[in-house]
Length: 522
Image 1 (cartoon, helix red, strand yellow):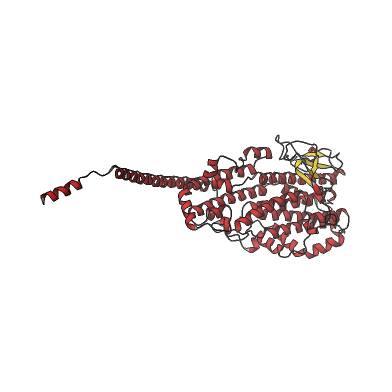
Image 2 (cartoon, rainbow, N blue to C red):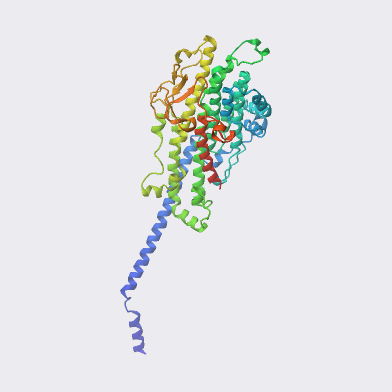
């Protein structure tokens, strides 16, 4: 019995083989490693969330909206709401017509019957649009829900663009029929339409449409200002034609030179874009949105468990990436409100698609969800140049009405007709817009995006369209801007013709925005 007990004791005290000691050490090391990773992940998550909340607090402290709830608006009574009248006006539109066709008919003096029918068909739409001009409040009834990037639906932008085309065509028709006072008021209605669209809380696409609508109004000024009838004769009401008053012209000049609404629309758009991206990545980190869906919809959804695992692992990196996107959005916002295009170019951040492989991984969302906004910023300066030249053209018409001829220099317009000669937003030296009274087609011009004064020279693309990326940017004082070929030459329907050379470029940008928004809506 004693021998048996001794044998058991010897067996129990046998040393553990070395291989098992290594397994214990490896297991212990793995446990420590996992605990370390968990601790790092917890610290990283706390750090990222703290940084994000600190930045949000900074925006709120500065009065800046950043969260979805910051964009909530109070309902506005219909009778005070400009958007309500514009939506009603769009519902009353008659047969559409393109502004380029109207301008072509005006030049051919074949407009009377078409003009009267068009104005009669759209009388109610024009009345409602004019009613909206006097409304300072705007509520398009856009009610956003999170995640905004996949739940947002545009609020009738196509119908508002159609309304703008109708409004500007009506202004040209009214001018052709001799009712210049009403024509100027209709152009002002279009500028008000652009302002209301710019207040639509849907991001960059609303700003682009507002810019395009504004450009249509500028085109209407270019087509009509050269022979606009101006008179303050109190007895003009009994005439067959109704000239515009000098005060009407001066009011339109002031509105064209007032760029507050243009700048506010840009800021509003970029704030909304910033909120959309924050909301999207927050939804991804909380498991409410697939990371793949936040970037680009796919026909085959990713399994939720995969999304959750990826979000759990990379959530802190994505939250820190939000800060980069916020910084980038703020820089782009400031660039769009720079005093001129050269200054904006210096502020614009580099192309987000470039960078090292490590940056592509660590900055995944900021690379994919924040595209280059260079073109959108450039378009804004095109519009500013056009508005300033339109205002100068109207001032020249007032001068001509008083003196019987156009001024020899733009300096002669100051201070009676203009407070100052408007600056060229593309001139790095802040020079004024240029004047070529001796050109075959007299014109004002901006030196354009290339920053070079080519003496008013323009470069043409196909279909007699001016290349906006080359040469100078003209404004034709005799209203003789080259038009695209009529439908008979192209074989296309009238409605397919571009509204103007300016609108062609703007429409391309808007279509790209519509496609991007359509992808987000899927």
